[in-house]
Length: 335
Image 1 (spheres, one colour):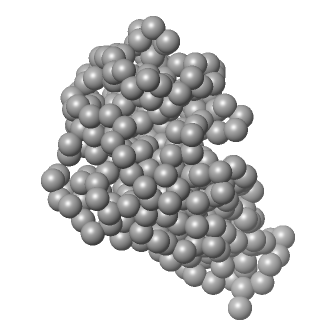
Image 2 (cartoon, helix red, strand yellow):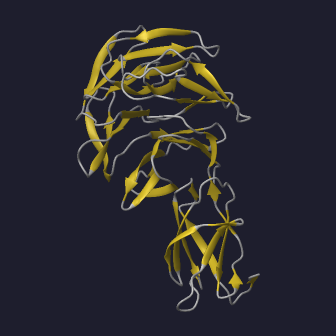
Image 3 (cartoon, one colour):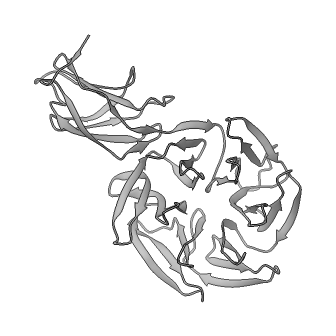
């Protein structure tokens, strides 16, 4: 059994600070590689991770499936490092089909979709995950549910990319049509004055006033997947959407509907959300990494979660992050 020793491997840092299954973590430290011809072992608790890169000062390891133990150790040359703790997401729900961000209500319930292929009507459209982790059907009559956002009146707004309809659903699952004719309706956002914004992936951002009047708010390049929207603390709308470009942008739309570029250089940008400190987060790939990135006011980009296939994110009231992949929903504890 390897022992902890000052002459053995030492982990000095791990980046990014959080990951979900399949994500890559970069370890920096000393003695992380053993002697020539030998291979070090990285463990998450008692579970061995897949070593992608190994060297004396740097190692990259893939997070195994089905674990939430964030105690990392390196075994090399007969010695074991002291544990280094990071945040690993744990699965809230599997076998879903989210295509956008989840939504979290005031009581901490998480809502996510099982969207299906174009025109496919599934037995359950939207699921509710309570704080105890129980997954329950919430709505069953929406084809291709896509965007989710809570209206200030407490109802959950849901877009259907199949019909271009926006639905409003009460906490007890009573549903009405909120607006129709929204094209291929995807992302949703709501501002302080209760205007609702809808991303039509063919290139239009609609604005729906509190009196349900509908306006064309902005026009963008069409998205090959979906538009994702977040209303910022600066009263601007932030928009991402995967296009055919390999060097994609995040857009910022001012209150008059004028579109400017906020940042660029991302691969397949998707979910966008602001945390309690008004920091913008984005699901994308960037410079070889993939997962969730924090975009700073100084144009900095910092990866905060590593993981494949992340399409959406939302923050809980205690600032944990809920992220959705194309099939799963994870909760990642705040760092």
